[in-house]
Length: 144
Image (tube, rainbow, N blue to C red):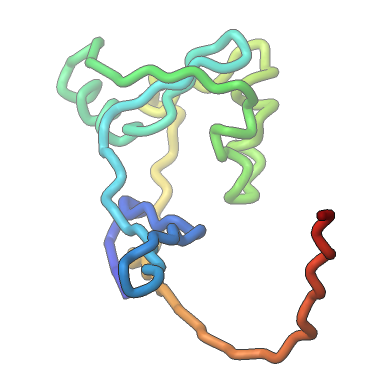
C-alpha cells in the first residue's frame, strides 16, 4: 500500500511478466510522476497540463514566463480533463471554446477561492492467485 498527499504516484494497472530461471516474476510498477510544468499541444491549442499551482505561484511573485515540458497529444481525451465529472474541466471549455480559461483568469479579482478538505491518495495493490481446472485442448495432428 502506498499513500501520498498528492496524486504524484503512477501505478501501472497492467503487470509486467518477466521470465526467470525458476519461472516468471509478476511485476507491478509504482513510481513517482514527474512534477514539472507541462503543456500539451492538442487541437491547435497549448494547454497547461500539469503545474497549475506552480504557475499561479510564479505569477503571484511577478513572473510572466517559465520553462515547461511540451508534448503533443492526438486527442483532447488524452488530457484526462473530464475524469472529475466537473463541467468546467470538460473538453469543450478547453479545446472548442472561442476563449478558453487562461492562467490570468485564476489570478483575477473575480476568481473565487475554493476550500477543499485535505485528502490522502491511497494506492492499494492486490495480487490474487486462484487455481482452476479447465478442459485440455487437443493439439492438431501434424502432417507428415
